[in-house]
Length: 296
Image (cartoon, one colour):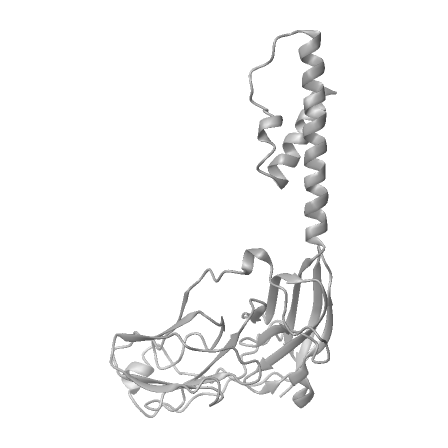
């Protein structure tokens, strides 16, 4: 009985807390073999397990406040869009050295119809009194201070970039030719700038502000086919879909929220999509929204 008690307590310790080790010393030397010592040991193990179980209960309650939301954005028509070749009319030797260039407006996976480069994020209900989204303790601080958007071969990489207000965007030109980085959002929020970029150069943008209504559009005036988008948020609950159209947002606050979905072509659901769609995030679990269609 003492053996099972010690093992159970040690397991709880390993999973839930770093503070129980003193009362469950698995590798501690065996005490003197006396009846009194044995009784004290059994009592200590029981007390330790009781404390660890209390920690487990607190952790379980905390988990109920947060959850994961995931899903997949898929193309909503039977016939998939054809890849649109871009007209490259300048610096062809460099721009086409790796092959033809294609538009990234509709990048649709042929195997599962998933759409890449779709922005997905949480927002409060417009009619709710509370306008701020609670942030999980592990996400309060911005961990990645700088993010990069590059122009390696006559296209922006990545095509869609989601950041948190306070992050620095490093605009980079790793190409052997000149580009420029022309970025602008809403004129009252993210006025932007048009920066000429010599080969192998970069500069930092440290003043982008959160704006859920308008993205920051990015272009190159030297190579007019180049386009990208940056969206800025005042919370960490956002994602950009991957090559399968999938997204996942972890440690999101449980409860009723709105999910907003925006793509190069506009809002999912048209103009009504600006307010997002109602969702409920389950605490301590993953909420799978399944396949969400977007149509051109």
